[in-house]
Image (cartoon, rainbow, N blue to C red; front, side):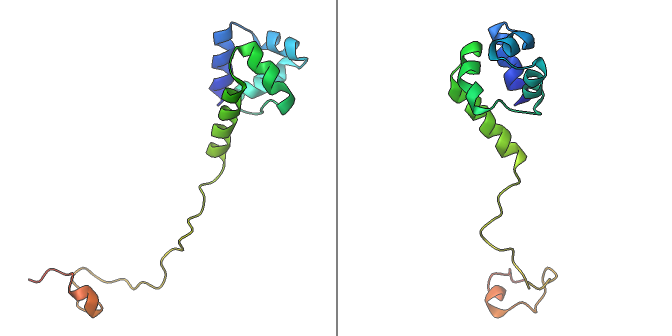
Length: 105
């Protein structure tokens, strides 16, 4: 994500200062976007996209990718198996229905 803004800015041939001046922001704000420390607020998405000559959707997609990388993986709806006894391979104390699946020697 951090590279997204820098890459788009470079492709547009603009400096951080030029973007900051055009949007009425500090160069530090633009630097924060490029380093992943911040993200442009909604009011700047459309003007920024116009400066970078990209679709505003591309900026929103970059935000979504950033959010998906930062958020923890969703918990599974299926609970973890519990109370499953450990059995050594080849153990004969398995319930009878499991015995049918074991190879017979």
